[in-house]
Length: 435
Ligand SMILES: Cc1ncc(COP(=O)(O)O)c(C=O)c1O
Image (tube, rainbow, N blue to C red; front, top):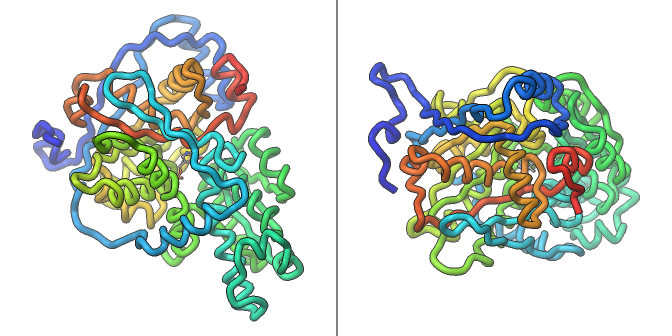
């Protein structure tokens, strides 16, 4: 891909790292929005009283100056082969569809809304990590040297596993996947959620028998509360984010996520994709997709664009700073699954060199894309729609198209990582039930 000079190095004349914002005008019909974020709703009300056509807030595109530099192998291939063999053996496993979209060029969307009946891709990672953790713990306690997932699901070691407690912090989807795995593989589960996780998402987790604890603050505060209580009670943390000294479980989770991109590669027909757009929270999914698309399409690998909400763009901030960086604030975005202020260490080690560009997008773009997809008969939640929302923003903007090398010949793979994981919020935003 050839980029104009100003996009290649990402520095201004004084050597400061800079981003390249693009604007477009969008006609947005706001009157019936009912997002759960109070501040967002209030500012929207002020706007809608005065205008019917408003400038869509700036989106930011940052071309990664460190793209392509050599680094560590974060996700070894053998680990992925184990994850694929395990997950594809589970009851209810089926590849999710890859759908063609009627947009210029070739745009295909991997639709994760039907994954294991849980509404998002997350079981690929969280549930896989739970199996490994339980099997490992049974071996360590000399109960079973190598318990299989079939043994665990069948309840063969239920007496021992029911004394094991797994715990996690979540913005909804990961916790639901972990709670599902705890019910399926017979262990106890405590899930931490933060202040603004919706009641619908809380109920979906509790439905699997997990104890749900709501804590004040953001996702990152829930991560800390979970780690503190786990240390106090001897529970096992199944976190989808990693930090120094905690990488084994998140690595398993990311190895599981790779299956989503692996299936897409199996389903892809014709010449390989030129671009892959994938949304990021802590970055685990994006890193897994980057690794697996590179493994499947290496000559040349597709450009990887990582997409975040503009109010929680910690990966973009890290790319700008040239090191892992947290963003402050209340991370007030409707894209709940992406509302993370601190990147995962392991994910960042991959993304800092694998990512071609980072994009930060406004909530309005995700909502607009949910509606666009609904019109195509595809149900995508707020975080699920983010990747395609960025594709649509970039396609509509000449500067962004030039910077990313997007054109009529491009072949884009995007991921809709969730369906209507909060059905009442979905209905309020799309003005239609989830189906
Ligand atoms: C629907 C959805 N998409 C994407 C992500 C981002 O995944 P990660 O936090 O690994 O970057 C999440 C995380 O919870 C999610 O729920």
